[in-house]
Length: 102
Image 1: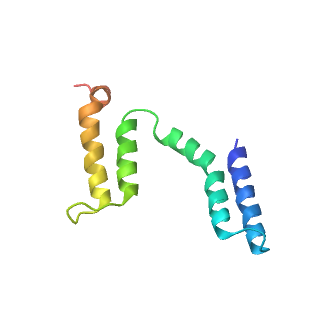
Image 2 (image 1 turned 180 degrees about the vertical axis):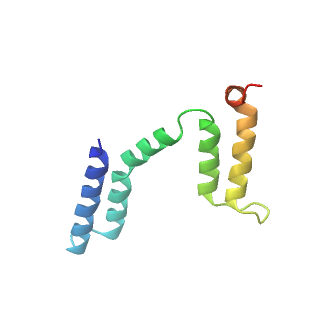
Image 3 (image 1 turned 30 degrees about the vertical axis):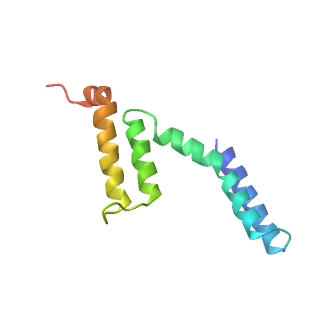
């Protein structure tokens, strides 16, 4: 079940050991560690962004992670605003399905 995570952790540990022994450069270590985490990120994103409001959640995440302030207001605020606007404009069916009946 957790084979991807275990394999990634093992690869990261082996590359750290190679750097500690002096047989691998720091830049190569960072590259290998990043590549070994891609499968874990893929499975996390698949689990996080399935279901209703998936596209707006992705937009919110990307803008927030970008970390670019606009008008001296931080990226988390703009991420929420962009995610809400995306959801209102493009995911109307999700709103219709999640509203309580009444």
